[in-house]
Length: 192
Image (cartoon, rainbow, N blue to C red; front, side, top):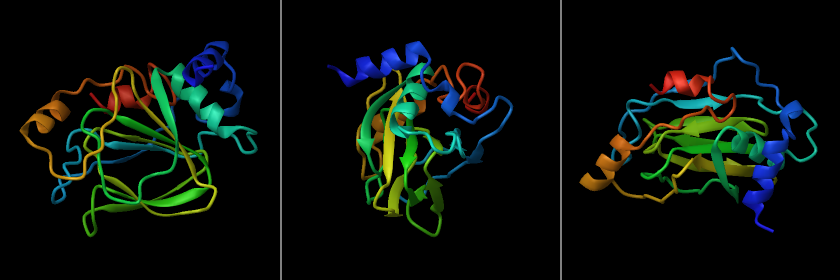
């Protein structure tokens, strides 16, 4: 059976809604990153970091995150970790839902301009296209759900964008919904 079909069915049934803690009116942490060497970042759209989205003790946090993201029109596409090398995506805005464990990530490219960030199970990060990211360290149980705005598929970029990629990132459509809150969530306001 297709896992996307199952995830969409779970979302349609509303399973998992009681497992989230994020309340309307809360604001995510924001981080606006400037170009850093070859890393383009996104000087117009901030990274959004939602802390403690999941309730403690959720029995299957990966499935709950997939359900939440699907319900809010973001396509979960993989379960894994974060690559241990600097990279970005030029074809998609990305959500990283942290299902278990914890990690230190570097956002925005190499230090000193890159920003080190600790993420834990239950957190959700939204990375606008062009945002550099890299895993510095992680616990053995670190698990991430990767999701993308509808009709966007990710690529893997490890060098400065050429003119075509730069234009693609500049004109990439905004998602219609916040991945955590939905149509009236912070992303729809902070990314306009």
